[in-house]
Image 1 (cartoon, rainbow, N blue to C red):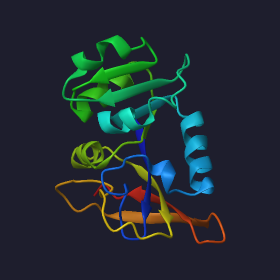
Image 2 (cartoon, helix red, strand yellow; image 1 turned 180 degrees about the vertical axis):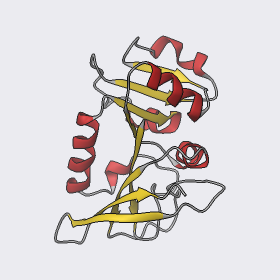
Image 3 (cartoon, rainbow, N blue to C red; image 1 turned 90 degrees about the vertical axis):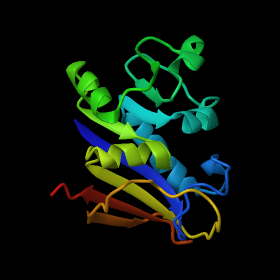
Image 4 (tube, rainbow, N blue to C red; image 1 turned 60 degrees about the vertical axis):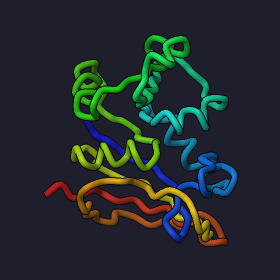
Amino acid sequence: MKIILAMVESVDGKTTHGDDSRVFRWTSKEDQEHFKRLVNQAKLIVMGSKTYEAAKKMLQHQPGKLRVVFTHNPEKYADQAIPGQLEFTNETPQVLVDRLTQQGYDELLLASGAQVNGLFFDAGLVDEIFLTIEPKLLGIGNPMAIQKNIINLTLLNVEKLNERGTLLLHYTVNKS
């Protein structure tokens, strides 16, 4: 399964402003449009519970699109689950990917935060990264991932999204 991570961060490497996970408050319209295109194309999206909580009012559930939320306590969300559209899990990333591959999925959009991203990096599962760099200094906030190992990347493409200098970087993850 191909796993694509989509993130936005400030020039100083922050994906949140402090503890506020509502990135749409500081990201550009162009990044939001890019992210929306990725989400609209994806049949399988994985996120953590903090990302889910920040975005759940905006989520539009639909048949043929599965969202999986990583949480330590899936039972807490049992009343929010929608079969085939929204599920909650505490599986490891590898077990989840194996299960979803067996269900016929061949691509996964990882749209999460530092903890879940780090789990996927540590498991060696991320294949590509779309990283938007916003021309802002947030000062405090979370990193893209908290992983154990150094991850080497190869730049595939750079696109300037607006006149302010928002950049969209597309990387492949070096697996060797």
